[in-house]
Length: 184
Image (cartoon, rainbow, N blue to C red):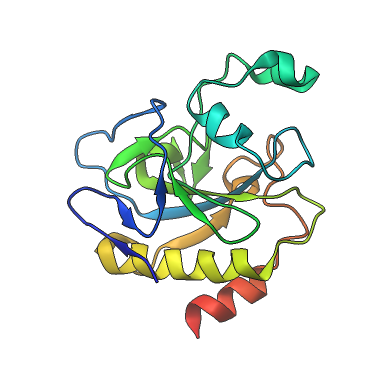
């Protein structure tokens, strides 16, 4: 379904929406971890262009009181999977997206340095759509095919790398369903 060019880090079949909130990975760092997140703007509301605007530093704070709280944040992710399964890419996989913040996995800090961040349009307590699971599994397959270091990579939630600080993708995320789709 998707193909990721290992040189450019761009995914065929993804809508490209370049975020400025990224930079080069540190020397010698390659993606070795996949982190699943969720996002909705404003919280609990789906659809629209607000996530694109947020990741591209164009969010209009006058549109919702919540936006004033996050207006100065400069964050991104490599990918977003919308409720209908649409794949959006903000940052090439070859670059570091600013998605995990203060984080640690298997004793390694600064997970942004060595991870790929995938946002699902959703909220912790809202079940995700079947189209999102299908797109997520296809994206993971494409990532594994493009980047050998991701072939057997851990797939974790933001809550796993930032416990106590983050809760996403939340209890509504069906990890067993994803494992079944990814592992056949």
